[in-house]
Image: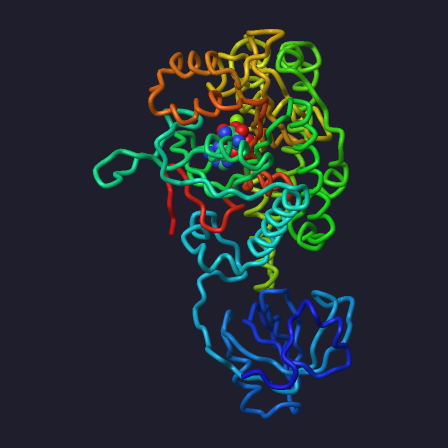
Length: 503
Ligand code: 4AD
Ligand code: MG
């Protein structure tokens, strides 16, 4: 099957002038008389392969001409650099072999709706956009592991079946564990705290499950979270750690995935800004901002911007619709149809934002100290900043039992959320942990949890308790923010949502 020198598309730059073989799939093709242009993808990129009649046997030329989208094949030919070509290199084909032909591939270059694509996720992963997202996700995960491994952290795998409630009793997935009720983990944190007492600095990285009843673009029921936990650290130390992690993720993606970021239309200058120090606000300061004139002005400006965007989109749609009515080639029709689908989707979003603007403005204006920040409040704060923002010291009553009460102000806890820039909202939640046995026991009881279940956790405060803390970063939300994708469901290969498990 692999004739000559088999190579990969992303290595073609080392083979200019040489004859090599690529193994892949037919992404797209067009023929004009004696010449065919095959766009081949091999998992590392796309390459235009040019087939000229007379340079290969006629029978093969005809076979390639009939070849359907996503047929698998090997192509052999000479590599040449061409700036205009996708990927910058192309191949003059001297031989080819069809491995398996494909007919009627469901995802054509024509536009498709989200529902259709989700049902065909197993195939959709091959498309340019999903492929690029997967590459960025890979880099994000690698950057996370590297950051911790290079900074003296020990990886500790925490269990998925668990007895404890880590975050919130209303979002547990119960499982029947040989007749005994258990649930799927919401966080590895409590186990990780015990490991931090053994190794000092640890992290866990795995799937996390939450029976979230909210169908928002920010919630999955199964998502991946990385959680570091550190002995002898205070809140300031945690903010430094989080800032370092998030900056190193952004810089790695910029270094490794520039072309994917371009494919995805990511905001590259915004990512370039992601360097320490991030902004820091206390919860009380955030509330002041939300209730104050700065937010009123900001929301009015936002509304103006949105209305302008709406006008522009509507006139572009009208223009395209006019063009559509004229005499066009099929590929021109397809191109217009694709742009219209995108535009109509964007217009719908802008309309929703216009509708929500006054509601969110009112929610912010009427915010009362003591509540957790809502999604819209986080969005406002994060839209107002060009770099990520830490919000610290939330009201104790709004937060989980394990967070350490601030000894200077007992109404708040020593915690933080990191709100990503550009309206993406929370990507990290973390805190210093309550290290005092008596206070922790009171908090467990206050939240209606059974102290017996947490007896092992209390042991950590019985035997050599130390100040410690950590945080959790959601991988899908981070990827979504980095690439500028609004729906986190696109940032995991096989998403699980409250109302949908497609495949
Ligand atoms: O803020 P959370 O709930 O914090 C914890 O679980 C802590 N125990 C972490 C720790 O201190 N070790 O979740 C942490 C992050 C969020 O900031 C968000 O990025 C992500 O996990 N996350 C979700 N991502 C997708 N879908 C959901 N339903 C998510 N819930 C949380
Ligand atoms: Mg949180």
